[in-house]
Image (tube, rainbow, N blue to C red; front, top):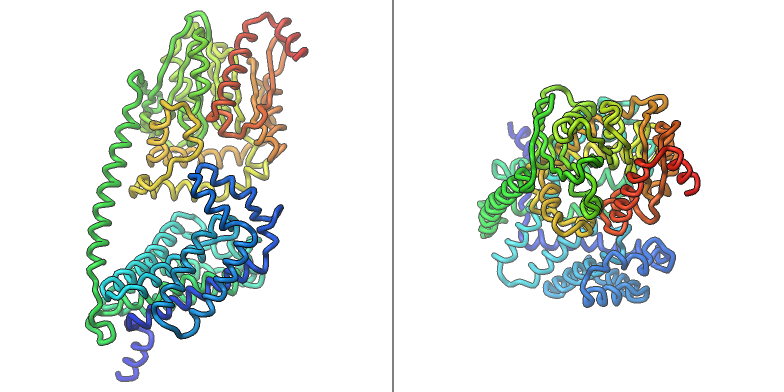
Length: 624
């Protein structure tokens, strides 16, 4: 039994370290990270020169909205000579922290490393990674602890680092859990075959021993998701948990080349060991744990507030505009829509949104139509978006969204009145399919940087971005359901929309329902677009195909597919036009007022031409 106890004590139990030893170990490990980081930057000084990867004359544009004082400080720090001098100083201070020294000088050294890392962060926008962020956190906390004479303040800072360490593992683990490749155990092999983190010999081993690879993958998941068990039962599991985490980082450093991650993340482990050991242990006696209770209260308040904010946003999102109407489709879905009648003898423009987009994204275009005053207008939210309810019980297919659109047109537009379908992105493909169902009532279809059902098979860009999108959408859904919407920053494109729409769009953007609807649509897109073969079916209707210049510049295959969409409409007596809006990208084609107003004008001009005699329209098209 004594041998068994000795073996168990070697692998199980707390790791009692004193406050002073934990501080010293953490600051040295963080200093080693800073030393490695600055030496790497000094050895690659060409990247900060003009034309380099981190050319400040280019990188500073990201801070154009910052205050003049902030920009001047960044310019001061980011000069080539100043940047080099700071890294040389960081190397010297890091070496000093690896040696014995006065506690207050050590505190000043850690604070210097932390503050200079923050100052240099914008300078090294490309290349700075999680290891630098973690070491900055540890350096500032340990520096402040060294400068403090209060043991309670020092313990509070130790708890801060420990809680941040636990949070980093838990969040990473639960985020991975949403990815199918982590759940089925294939993620490890997938990572090791990438260009950035790949290691061919280890990848070959994962293919030779797939069962072992799955066990390791699931082991990483379990370690990260359950990391706080190190605190249970008086820290009895601290040794295996902290030891496994250190081994994980060592393996990443060797196999994936993430050397700085080893010292940066392990720098948090002494604080975790110090706080997870039982307070009754002689080495730990006197530890102040009040900050843990404070953190629990703050967390509870934050959760309550985020829940209240999310509920308030949900109410605003589902309420709709004062003029909103509702209809129920054949699938049981309830659609929220807005309509403007215009002249009853003229067509109604029906706007169909893209995936993860709102009807307010068309704001600049619809304002242009309303200013014209002659045409009817119909905007709506697909099932699951805004105030529309998704109630269908059948497996979701894009055909369901097409049916909903056709039912909406039948409800909101008199059967003897023409419609023009205007679709952006995925909305363009839905409009194309709906036009075939609605028949003669559709005068024309307008495609705004439209999706093509063959794009996942033909566009390298779409194919590459498709793989991680599902996991990202799933992460957003669960994050927002957990109340993280309160942490979302307002995206830059939002401020380009008409002012009256911005608040409502952000409420939708921060609501889990929109992301859940987008995730549902994305799964259907992957299945149906991935299975697409052959040519597009002919559609005997007028068509206007508008492409965003930046979309087709990045991937010329998109321009070919947009021309194929136009070709499917060509025929005697039909007006078909293709245009490229210079300077616009996929989203700014709608959200930027410069392009949105121009698109609105192009649509109105095209619609007017569809009313002309066929020979006149064809002659004008040839002239244009």
